[in-house]
Image (tube, rainbow, N blue to C red; front, top):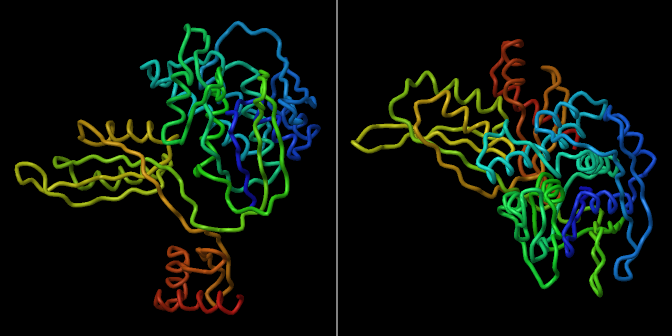
Length: 390
């Protein structure tokens, strides 16, 4: 699996990420051509070779015309959605700004739709985020891992005043992420850098076992004595294929006064909104009432919308949510030909060894009904066909 490792010994910003990705092999001409598909003008991107404490690095500079208005989340997502970028780039770019919006909403205690970005809503931040998403696709990255993040120290001047490092929005974005500070003064991890990294990375820790292929250094704007203010990215083929760990959210609520018919509707709504799983557990509640524990597993970007849905669709007066780690086997879909037609099979592997094989149930059931044979007979035919091919 093609893996990218963010080595954040000097933190990260949007332009540092962009510079490091170009230094690691993303073709600048292709990147600029893709950025032109955003459908907006007033910006250009330049890349220059420079040095940070003796380390050769690439400095990415986004040049924009002066802007006087602030964009909201919906404004930015509209720009992305109406562009001619690939669906993969659109989805990731929109997800990054969704995370930024949720963080700003929590910091300012505002509804998400009322949040207006300041620094991160500017055109250069949009180019940084979309440019990073384009580079990830150009470099064919499948897995993202990040080191503990050096956040810096001291204070930083922002539109609302002087704030401690890391500033409030960055702190929100880095929940669940290992961070540290040293005597280096200044804001090393910016909101844009934090949002990009936490949107793609589910694993944080030491460098994984890689067959190292490409290395890139992205220069930060400040220079320090005897400290390289640069982001290093390492790209290579993952040699471990261990279960992928990702940090998710669990949303729960106990309900004892709702019609059972509504639970099916709520589960369907949850999955439509992007929930990874939704399930019901019978529980005995206070006053000896039988009730239901409704549990929803989701990513951070879906937590707020799923919470709003529970308040709107159920009788609950409160919900609980907490972070949870999940490890998942590597999975792929294979299609096999059988006497009953083509059937998809989900194949789960660990370290290159097949652990589980599961024919797609609905396809097997439809094939069994059409052929007038038992469901189990179709499932066995699928497994036999898969074994013959392997």
